Length: 160
Image (tube, rainbow, N blue to C red; front, side, top):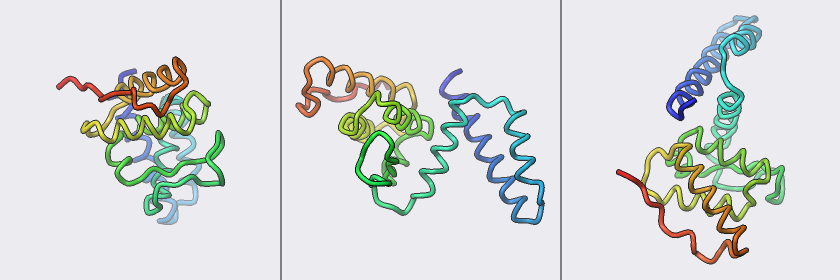
């Protein structure tokens, strides 16, 4: 599935969640049950569902400065993205990076370096393809020489 259709799917899913929550607030006691059924029938991929969940969680901390939630940064800590990060990266790209970190593919330092490079790239919004490329480069360079902080990641080259 292409990055654009993933984005559209996540947007459709988020609209559905918002609509059903609004229906629930308007007195429809079956709205949440209908939401579950609509999700089951909607054909969303696991990645789209995960991206929507991460988007909702990121929005929940919208007024919180960038920080690690639930204690010390670690594999099971949840990071709240800054407003600049949320504006710079697509929902899918941010979800992808958070998932890489959750799985242990990127450590905390690598994750922060990837975000720094992507936010500074000037691309708006950063898509999953660019996020994947930069994350791969940062992870591989870290693995090759063990010097994640040596500044050898260079600038991001973006085709215009």
